[in-house]
Image 1 (tube, rainbow, N blue to C red):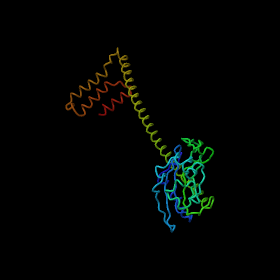
Image 2: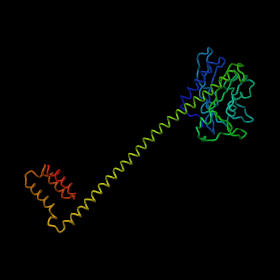
Image 3: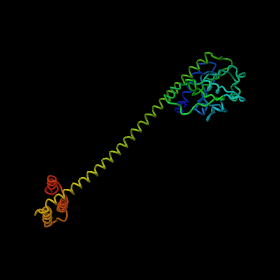
Image 4: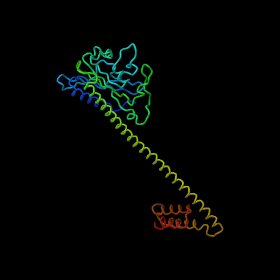
Length: 320
């Protein structure tokens, strides 16, 4: 797993660390920060590079014109230590998680590969940017296993740290030593950069988790509302079916109850009498008269309990 943060935030953090070093160390004149990608490829690529002018006040930013580390970068298999090919300071720093100090580039065995970047102009120091595995993975296992070195040993198996980047600082020639104050300052700042990038990632992950939680809540509400809507629709349908069934049962009950009674046609006779009376009145073909006839015929087809039937007659017929 590599540090995954916004590109602009990553570049700004790297620029700030370069500015701090170039403004505070008088003999430092150029700084470059690399990102080391996640396993298994572990691609090393330039993030940003700055050169301070002679008066030590202005920094010019831009990547080298020619470099294998310019985007898209160089995978681990191409910069690791291997026999019969030039060695690189990057391979040393990533594999061993240790810095490389180049006091005299003309005599340094790990400088041959980088002469195209004007390394011969002065000394340089390359410092890996480390973060703790437990802080980066937060209890989870890495999604991919780290690659092997040329001898077949998996990187960082016995280490508490992973390498997420590297800081390369150029100095005027013969102004730094292995373990000098300048190198110690760069080491401290590299740890600060690692912590800052990790905090950016954690913040970004927290925001992403909050966004996903909000989306889950919205989706849950939608599912719940759909379920409630379906339940209400089904309950309404069931209630309507129950009403129909009760009406049918009451119709059968009334039929059986009045079968041998001389009052079995009382309801229909009363409604027909009302209809006849209304039809005998002028202007009943439309308006209130027609509405009353329609209401009476609807009542004729209903089989309601006594109280509801009385209420229906009062509201739909009498009050009109």
